[in-house]
Length: 168
Ligand SMILES: [Zn+2]
Image (cartoon, rainbow, N blue to C red):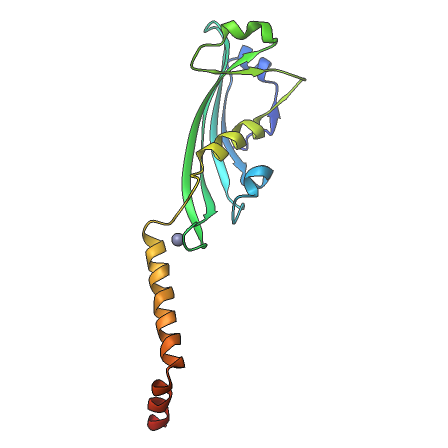
């Protein structure tokens, strides 16, 4: 079984120790994300690398998950694999903003612990396509729907009824 990621941790201490956290987290802990999913029973996988000694305190990482979204064409659930990468420059005070490299997002450390959930959730929300649709399975679903409509139409056709009567 994969290791569970903590919901919160002390980012500053982890960066000073150059800790790498790797593991899984149930999607049900991501409340904002859960709202856009048709099923939040899965889990995400993420790797968070806290670094120091590179001139700044960093948090680099990646997250991936298979999300169950609603297809915007057929309105049926669909599995969609998403992944994202992030790079933060951690600051104990806003005056250190100059130390944050240009390709990293500044992250102001407040309180004793910071939320791992929030960082991963933000990243996953960004990775969801605005209009998610099935690729192959969707056309199969629509085809089946067309077939059902055709059968319905035949049933409502009076001649079809006569034909049925004859057979009886
Ligand atoms: Zn579809």
